[in-house]
Amino acid sequence: MNKAPLFLEDQNLENGLIYYEYTLHHELRAASARLHGLIYLLNLSHTEEEEKRIKKLLGETLDEMDKVISDVSQKLSCRKDKSTIAKNHEDAH
Image 1 (tube, rainbow, N blue to C red):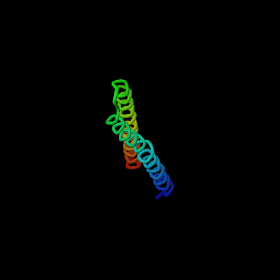
Image 2: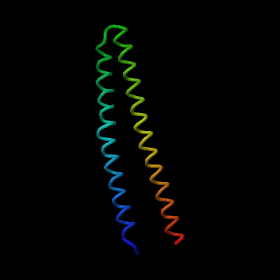
Image 3: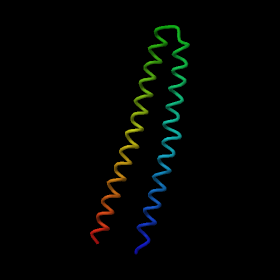
Image 4: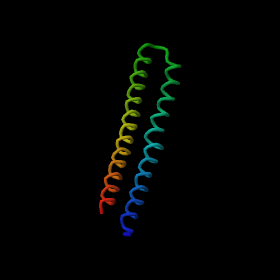
């Protein structure tokens, strides 16, 4: 059995895990912290203008979180597809 593909597969898995860890810890946590801060500010706001601005920022932050989740989901799906293709190719030989 050739060990190179297993090594590359392990390395690809590790690189993928590093990407997901970064995404979760930085992008999603930052957006989550912004949401908490904006909700706090919304509770303090007194003018309609302030509330309108904060609600706009809330929507933008939620859109950002949705994009991050979609990107991660798409990357996971691509990895699954590549893994299936590689396994099928390996089984054929």
